[in-house]
Image 1: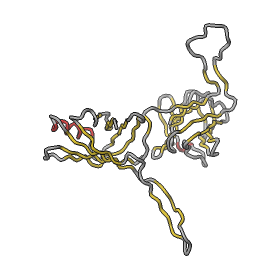
Image 2: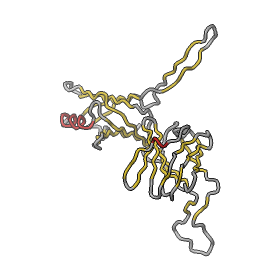
Image 3: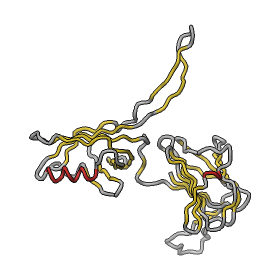
Image 4: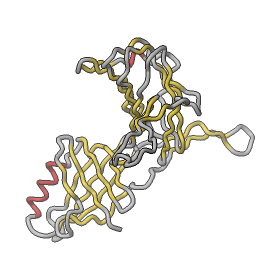
Length: 275
């Protein structure tokens, strides 16, 4: 199977582990598949079977086994060390003919056999966030009026729409992957008060109390390990997670179809969402 594997550190330096056969030759990559789940159960007293306490997935441990070939192996070994450094952040790009994804983690080890005729190495990366994410983000927009004007301009007198008006106030997002958090932006509003994002299917909601002024941007991230609520006003970011109303849920995208709508005391019209 043809694939591309690129590693990138926190400074943006990259190294392509599949550049050519005479530089890096990957022999095996472990834990590309969904990691194993941890299932905790307890037995009933005197009854067959058991009951579930909890079920979760701990972390992903990607192990890359490779060989270094060709000339200037010593030089390329140090190039690898400058990008892949133990205990430091690393981003993994993985692409095949059907997928183009990335995940993030921290280097556990980067080891090489320096004194054998064929230099072999192994990189172990711990990914606390177990998911692979698409390189191309998916955007969905909530607007009361959606633009429909487009080119080429019609060459006849048949009427055509300049925009469409939504009467339902609902926005649907199709998630073809696993359950995941996402990013919500509330922007381009005239002074609004206490906006609420509702999941029309599950009944869950996320509400932010207080006033939003014209020009403000509120960014909400609901991804595991990175839940934030930020207000950007006059170019300055403020942490406003304390403005979440009690009873709010960190909304997620379930697998399949998701439907959201927005309510507020006044003036919420636009809600871009990014997975």
